[in-house]
Image (cartoon, rainbow, N blue to C red; front, side):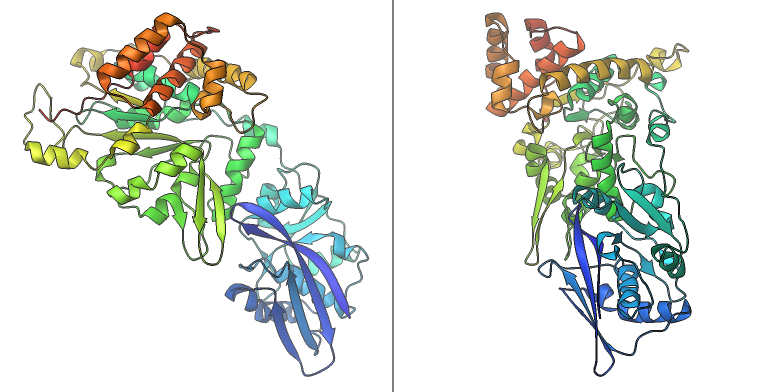
Length: 510
């Protein structure tokens, strides 16, 4: 009296197919779950027993053993309730389904037999498709999320009895469908626009370059100059997400349970703004069972740190490795997991604690020691990993009062998309590189050739500004992006000159 079916689990943000084996044997009645089951999985016996009885079926008075394979992987969550219940009913003879072993099933059961939603359905379905599974039973509330994956039938069930009737062939359920194209038609609908920003043409140009090449950006200036305002409008000019990027991003939000109910597929690039009291685990990820942090939630999008020096220094320092590698590796005694973290870092800061150092109207009240202590929150290695350092001056009253709107986000985004298409063509044969900011030294040598005039200009700038070898390569990447925006095949001295000015950050205490 043995029944087998399939279910799903999530390790990190990737799916894993789990085989659920249910054995009914003679002996004293009991319910045992093996296969490194965590607390919520072990508690499923009480939910499953009540759900089977309250759905009108007989719970077999046998010794029940449930094995979740592979046994070496820890199982957590209540998503195994439905496959375990169906396995028990199949082993006891209440359900006859010849192809039960080939169907993947996931869902939490309430005591009355209702099927409740679970986290991480999208990565499970993606992995099931890779493994050749053709049908996947999911809770009705997860159906639209799961149905964004083409090539696998998503069967939405609301109750245990409905799942029984479907598997027994007594009820037909039409596979769920999600119109992905309709979702992508909503991707450029924003409530803010760059046309609302008055003045700051230099800073807006820097945002365009950063968006086109995926470069990190640091904004410095006195309060009220529009740093946060422009940063919040950055998503409106970012290049459009492709389907693969949208699936990667949605997997992370599905795993953490942050996927909006009305948006089964994230079609706009995420914009995360954590508070400065965040912990290092909240920023990078962690916990007893590691979960993605803010840097992973910003994958394929923007992580905005407002008032960056107010963050704790050790919290900021943990971003060094993700900024360089685009991946977070979290090692624990129980598991070692890798989370994607390919994001644009945009940070804003004041020149001093009171904010008015260098202001022509208000006088700074900070001592040189206070200013230095404030700026020491940002270490040299961290600043070196930020491609563009921009000074944002106060806006003149004439620019604020003008009725003439600035350039719209749509027009800027058109130029950004054109530059990104050039980069995608350039890196078509290179794995894991989608934009200029992700280039390594080998790609820089291949795609970023400089003439003698440009080399001389860059070498002179490096010597005068005292920049590092990392900054040298990042300036070349920025120059490549500027050339792409101009539609130029090669990099000339004008592109290098503009790129150099984006690395000039004034840190004199004065």
